[in-house]
Amino acid sequence: MWGSGFTMGVTEFSIDNGKWGINISCTGNPNENNVLAHTIYIYKGDKVVANSEEKNISFVIDGEEFWGVVPDGTRMNDNAWVSFVKAISTATGFELYINEKKVATFNPSAKNVKKVMDNNFIQSCWNTWYE
Image (cartoon, rainbow, N blue to C red):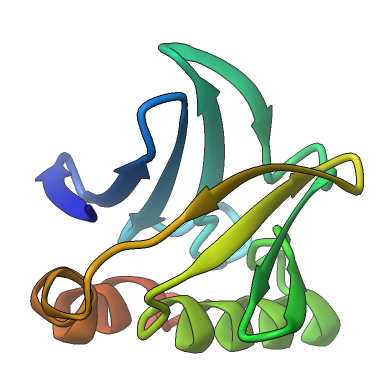
């Protein structure tokens, strides 16, 4: 199930399947270039094993692959981020890949997705630039 929390200008959305976990951290604090540098962390147990800065993670949602890229001020990565946010915000099933190898499947309920990801996720994570 998805869960969420907020601390110091960062809203975090997390899900785990008992072995693997995903944390999507969406910041309201811009970097020096006015970019909202959101981040994705992948956990195995309680150890971070991958993150979006390494660009080695991807998700398959409804048969479409989304690389774990985050906003960096480039049109390509910002557009990829927005597409990922849109897709995962309604997904009731998706797969996680690290280094192009499938490592986990997640199946949150439709009710959980609607409750946690519907409005707050979109509002917190959609923007890529600080306004």
